[in-house]
Image (cartoon, rainbow, N blue to C red; front, side):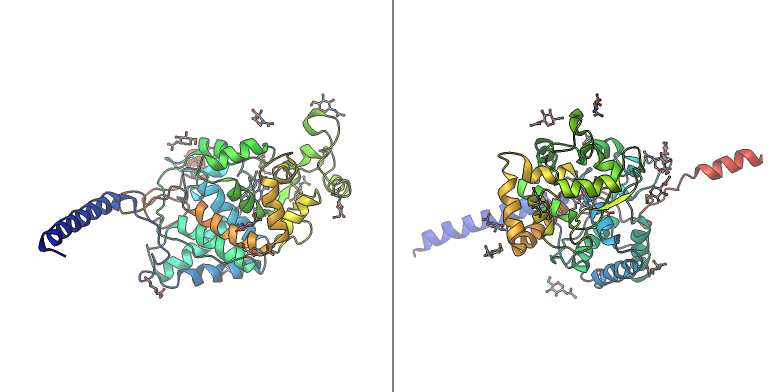
Length: 352
Ligand code: HEM
Ligand SMILES: *[C@@H]1O[C@H](CO)[C@@H](O)[C@H](O)[C@H]1NC(C)=O
Ligand SMILES: *[C@@H]1O[C@H](CO)[C@@H](O)[C@H](O)[C@H]1NC(C)=O
Ligand SMILES: *[C@@H]1O[C@H](CO)[C@@H](O)[C@H](O)[C@H]1NC(C)=O
Ligand SMILES: *[C@@H]1O[C@H](CO)[C@@H](O)[C@H](O)[C@H]1NC(C)=O
Ligand SMILES: *[C@@H]1O[C@H](CO)[C@@H](O)[C@H](O)[C@H]1NC(C)=O
Ligand SMILES: *[C@@H]1O[C@H](CO)[C@@H](O)[C@H](O)[C@H]1NC(C)=O
Ligand SMILES: *[C@@H]1O[C@H](CO)[C@@H](O)[C@H](O)[C@H]1NC(C)=O
Ligand SMILES: *[C@@H]1O[C@H](CO)[C@@H](O)[C@H](O)[C@H]1NC(C)=O
Ligand SMILES: *[C@@H]1O[C@H](CO)[C@@H](O)[C@H](O)[C@H]1NC(C)=O
Ligand SMILES: *[C@@H]1O[C@H](CO)[C@@H](O)[C@H](O)[C@H]1NC(C)=O
Ligand SMILES: *[C@@H]1O[C@H](CO)[C@@H](O)[C@H](O)[C@H]1NC(C)=O
């Protein structure tokens, strides 16, 4: 190599190094999530979260299902930023009142227990958004499902989006086109839709969320034709017309509390509980059918895909770096904000 070409090389190497530095400075405001984010600041974060969930599951077998759903409903509304956890206050309209959440989402008390345990060990360090991401993974493992490396470093929002919670979270009576569109709107594809719907391998749903299929489906005067007739009879008995819409059914009638691939074989037997579940398999010509068949015949394929899709979902628009968001000290409240309790205002008025 001549000294001339050596000079060219070293100057272009310098130029590339400068370019890389410049690019990395630009990206500094949108730092990536990192599995080792709490490595030095809260090394036991995973086991602390795991212990609180494990304790809660002793008296509430459903808690893991409820916790992973909180992560999903958090991430689909302006990203994974802990916004679903905020209560009403003078500045906050809680997303807990949105249609998909009201009288439905649960597990907030366990999130508070996790936060308390973390504040005792590593005060002011772990965000509520990251608590939901970790809790989702620990819940799946506890129920016999796959493990994955949870990426961390999300910060907590100081705002909520009630409108977004009403419009962006998919509804059980929506058709496959709409479900695919709502996933696509947050950067998730049809494989993510099919694998993440597999979270309905555990947990419960209320009669009011599928009764539209049982008696008069789409104003036809008949039940949803894609419902297995034996399963239909069971569901009609559980959810009579004009009955209590809050009665609970298992999302997976075969193994209600285990995390496995039976959700997909249920779909092949026309035993998906929600319309949105059964559509993945029963919509004629749909691209989702072969994915259901794959996961139904191969649990390893489901587990691998589910793990990747959970990472994808956890990556939706996180707040990172020091410029945006905060580490909430109480997951229900923006730091420095106070909870706005109607009762105390009322007491003040009535006692004066
Ligand atoms: C594809 C669109 C989806 C729709 C339309 C949907 C809808 C629903 C509905 C209506 C319920 C029952 C709520 C109730 O009756 O109170 C439910 C429960 C549940 N969902 Fe989904 N869901 C979807 C996707 C997901 C995803 C992506 C996850 C997580 C990765 C998830 C996890 C769960 C779990 C675990 C439960 C049971 C919760 C419990 O027992 O407390 N769902 N879902
Ligand atoms: C800290 O992070 C490094 C990689 O950056 C990893 O190899 C190591 O196991 C981590 N230590 C702990 C205690 O998690
Ligand atoms: C353990 O579970 C019990 C019953 O659900 C609960 O009262 C208690 O606060 C939990 N302890 C911790 C450390 O989360
Ligand atoms: C939150 O505040 C709104 C009024 O802004 C009220 O309608 C709603 O009931 C409150 N929700 C809760 C859970 O307190
Ligand atoms: C939620 O449940 C409460 C108490 O059962 C009830 O008063 C309220 O109407 C329910 N809200 C909705 C939107 O279903
Ligand atoms: C709230 O969500 C809606 C629907 O996704 C979106 O159009 C709107 O920009 C969001 N608002 C804020 C303030 O983020
Ligand atoms: C799906 O639902 C949307 C919104 O309700 C509707 O516009 C569309 O025609 C439906 N598509 C199919 C294929 O049924
Ligand atoms: C089904 O619902 C439609 C529209 O709500 C109604 O007109 C029809 O009478 C219902 N049929 C039966 C058998 O209840
Ligand atoms: C409806 O069912 C739910 C769940 O089983 C139960 O908690 C509630 O008390 C029932 N309501 C009525 C009015 O029976
Ligand atoms: C209905 O469910 C039963 C029990 O799981 C199953 O054996 C049968 O094949 C199903 N029928 C249809 C049409 O899917
Ligand atoms: C099942 O899926 C796994 C993971 O994708 C793959 O390695 C394996 O070859 C598949 N097994 C069969 C029998 O197709
Ligand atoms: C089944 O799913 C696995 C995991 O996503 C994937 O690697 C494999 O290619 C799929 N197989 C088929 C036949 O679609």
